[in-house]
Length: 118
Image 1 (tube, rainbow, N blue to C red):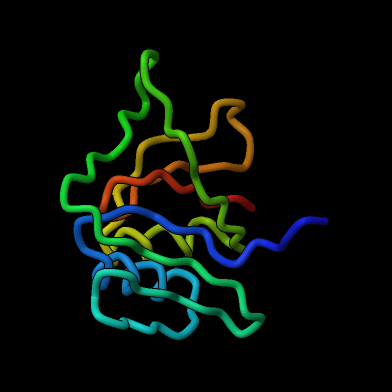
Image 2: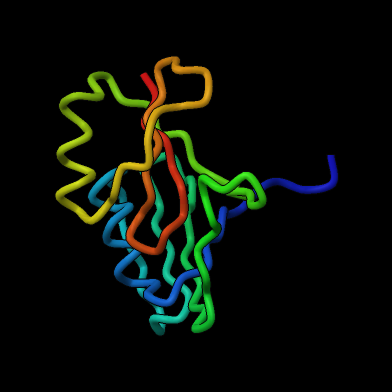
C-alpha cells in the first residue's frame, strides 16, 4: 500500500452551503476553515470536503454525450422517508437507477449526482 484515502473532495461555487447540505444528509461535523475548503467529518473519521471552484459547472447528466464522472451512493433504510428530507435540503430528483433496481438518482445543490440506495 502506498497511502490511504484522506478525503473525497467536491468542487463547488459554495463550499459552506454544500457542506451544510451533506451534513443534513449524512450528519457529522463541519470545519469551515477560511470558507474556500470546508470539511465534513463523520464519527468514524471519514471526510467529505468541498473546495471553492468559482467556475464550477455541474456535469451534464443524464446526457448520452456526457458523464456524471463521479457520484456518491448513500444507503438508507427507507427511501420513501429519506427522499422528502433530501429534497427539503435542496436536492432535486433526476430519476431511477439504470437497472431499475433499488436506486434513486438526485443532484445536490451544486449539481453533483448522488444516489439513495436501499
